Length: 487
Image (cartoon, rainbow, N blue to C red; front, side):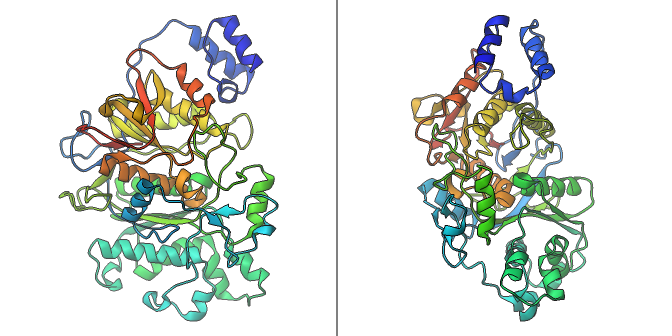
């Protein structure tokens, strides 16, 4: 704090609270200050847009709604806590303010073994249930199969049925890809701990390559099959790879999915030791009391197709019967941040600008921002400051009820404030929230956000200029903008 204030006074610039984290070396900080004090230079506006509802066309997008690399979300399926088994039920849970957290059930493990940390998380019931016969899997093989593999099969089948499939044989030899994001594979360790017999089924039921390869085998899909572990971004990177494959013609359709099943107390203990988890097991996104994240389970999958192959009559799944398209996507890495686990604002900003540029749409048309929003005192301010720089030359935060033209607001949402951090599925959880918000023209409240983190407000305050964009938190319904874009 003293260093930031000293530099600000010495050079006459306004430095955001996250400046030392965004520019953690002397060279990087010097370049940032040099650019801030240099004469203003004209810059061409960044392009924008990631997810768009099927109705309405924005400037910068072609008249048929198919932007650069536009991909149709033909169907979506999910399983989340409290019996949520569809995107529609998930949206209802968001808007109703459902409490998804619970004390860790003893059927999983004793919460006293979690290293003295959080005893609360969100869990999907009946992850041990599986109709093996539907997928032509023997009972012996099913018993050794990771629940995440079983859930992936079920989600792919539900999406397949939703798009007109009648029998498993209908999909054989289709050039459909399978892309999966996953972070933990705990079932194999549980089998060892329980003294279960180790055999060939243990390998095929738990290995990562087998996990993602199973749907291709069961449904006879001959498109690419790839598993991704990039931690919290795994399912979004998997979606990016699926969209890329479709755009390049490597696949004619694709399943993109994320899975997250929590079976070991030891993982809770490790994350507690890292000081990652909130003691109360909840993600208090953007709140002044943010003190870590709460863990959560979730399983979600999208069935994706190029727009030429998908329905354009508004019948595709995505909320309210509105067809949705992924207009642009991008992937990068933080690089050298202030610490190994700390986020890096400039990389996040560059990523958003790149993704929006792929979509060929103006940043001012983005109406909803589905944040990573873990609810950490460091991560939230860095993320929102990066978003503010990416989306406008000026930004501020207010409660949605404080006023403002609904058509000019960018409303902030965070699936983690409801579901907890679903880790391997986290990106897909956020994507489903963004898709629903775009389709419904509405946004739920940020659960557990009662007092805005002052570092978030201060980080954005330095960006405010006349006519700058406005970020809003809280329940909100857009007034009647002609376009529906979410990031």
